[in-house]
Image 1 (tube, one colour):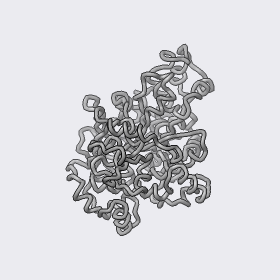
Image 2 (tube, rainbow, N blue to C red):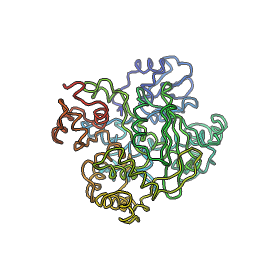
Image 3 (cartoon, helix red, strand yellow):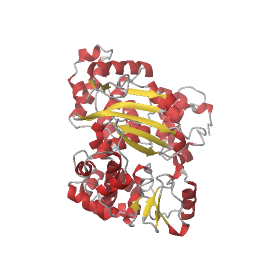
Image 4 (cartoon, helix red, strand yellow):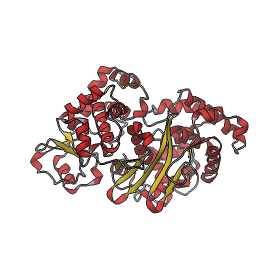
Length: 497
């Protein structure tokens, strides 16, 4: 994330705006003084005059300066900026705080507050406010307010939810507070925006468009998901660039999601079941993490390009459900991808919940933590799972059901990994793999992975875990992306410098 102390290069920003360059989508926002509107660099309106432009690193800064979001390019749909640092402690603290505020799953039913945020980060609320404002130019609550208002704006534009439900879904405690905040920030009422800026929602779900920064290797992402796809839960079609699957957010909120990549337009068209509408901000955050839409390929390739020069478009596949990913990781211990898929499909057929969807082939939900916690060892054994895997699945399901462990992009990485490794049958490899895909830790590195150890060897022989760790030091803080690139194309066939 950029610090206000590091001024944006206004001339470079303006050139990106004039070119509608998608590589900078979400990296900054442009405020136009003649209209009072702020836009994404990819906005297709007539390019404003240079003297009328102001540039901001974050949407919250633009709104703090009095600009309103564009109804055409819709800043709430831009990729977020997910920078990581191992050097500047203040920057790292501000980044972690912003990451927590941006993650609906991190709070559950709890109302975010500066005091609660500071407690999670182990600092005083006064120190957090000072660092956050110094690094990001706004207060933590102003940052959160912008996120909530943009989420509400998306719900108003893309759903038929009543305004009262929109307010609650976006995180506002009351309709009155929501109306007041919306009118103060955007100078119009929520109902006026819906009349002026939205189109009728489709009958077969809610339509949302999400952007990403190129390059993005869509074929490889879909192939990765297809190789691990579970019948009934997932459907991938390479010919149409689509991936669809079922999703359970909680016992009362379940539905389906369908995503279609449009590579030339650098965007993903997403359809979400109406049943998931009240949780749309949470769903969209998960889709972004699942498909790694917020990655910054330029920053990542600057670190990895010397060793993996032709793979800038590869992303780290995530997950829509951290518990599901963790179970799949346990099932996949010491077996091939095909064998793991077979075992997981049996698990879904036996313990998954039927779900009616309008998409052919999507018929079941992945088993809930409660269902697997209640499953007997004999039932799991009949599916082909050995005793060690049975114990690990039971322990994992019970820990998640009780709230002891949460696996999502806003979770504390170190604490979650320690809690996972304390469970029977879950070692370092499994915890690292969960961190890589479910916790979205860009520096995750499963050094014990046999395929990775072979891929990182200059002569194709297997390295030790320690040697693999040493080889990967130069790839921090993007080692997770190095893992994906190494799995795709062994290092010994590329550069060995």
